[in-house]
Image 1 (cartoon, helix red, strand yellow):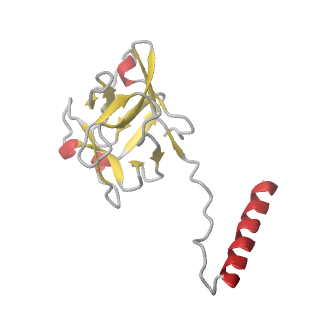
Image 2: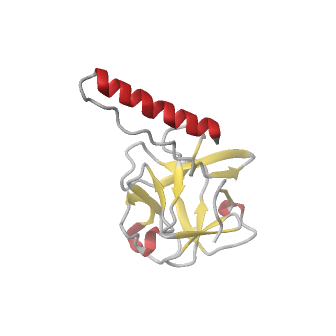
Length: 166
């Protein structure tokens, strides 16, 4: 804790000195890293995969299981109940449909979030607040869909570190 305070004070002092010698130009204020982001993993056929968008261009793209370590796998579970990636895109049930087998996509986050962008965690399951269905994987590189929650289904088992369960 003390080291963090010293680091912030040091950055603040350096910023002030640079502003003085650079004729008033300042660096942006220091912001500590966002430590609430984490990967969501799933175990499938004896291998661990991470949840991420199907492509780097995320809007309207399916969310899939993919090899871990690729860009676009840092998720944030927001206090509102939304789950966001890259600040502007949220896990979204396609078309706001309450029906089973509906795909989960990346879609611009609503503010406040709409029901199809609200989620809760129950054990190791990610449950939609729209319809009570569970996020379900179809396998590596295949889309995630919504299915009735089944405690025996490993395709609905996700590891969500540092996540507060509702």
